[in-house]
Amino acid sequence: MKIAVAGGRAGRQNYFDALTGAGAEAVPVEHDRDISAYDGLLLPGGADLDPAWYGQANTASVAIDRELDELQFALAKRFIAAGKPILGICRGHQLLNVCLGGTLIQHIASAGRHAREPGSDEDKVHDALARGGILRELYGECFAVNSSHHQAVDRPGEGMIMTLVSDDGITEATEHDTLPILTVQFHPERMSFAHKRPDTVDGELIFRRFMRMTGGKE
Image (cartoon, rainbow, N blue to C red):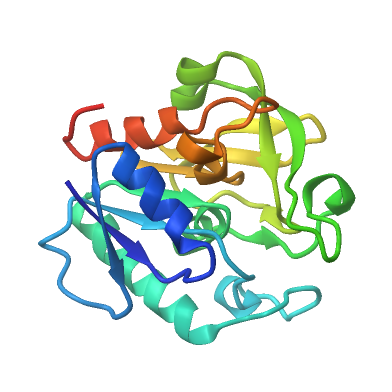
């Protein structure tokens, strides 16, 4: 299975390694292009979206890359229109919500519990509560995930259903009610394979489920 990975050069090898471990071929995509060669799309983590995409002035968004925004929105719309599976991680989780008409919180009040400390490369860890969907099926009702973000989903996009929430109320995962779209606020690529950690669940299960969504073997 060929999975397009759109942008997100920083830390991209982790996504490639996770997809490869799950049995996929990860293909970097740097330009809007024909998607017929791909079985799915992965939208990786990264810096904040330009709030203009969801009709807000910039009050707390940082490191905006408008060119990357445009690439990822264009590809997301192509895959959505084609009904092809999409996995959104962190920034990708937020971008898909906005792409479907939702909004974001530019800086959450509990950022100290969710964002890395300044100068640190260590993720935070917290519990999350599943309200149904794929993640409850994979991990049960309550489980620990990593965390490295200061923004979050506010109003859900059209068709997006919140399926996981942190213990302080942050949307940690969504699924679309009809399309093969799964998004997570945390970073399963840093919880799986060579990066598997003892204080969170195993992120490998998410990548293997994504392979099932694209028609590959789990």
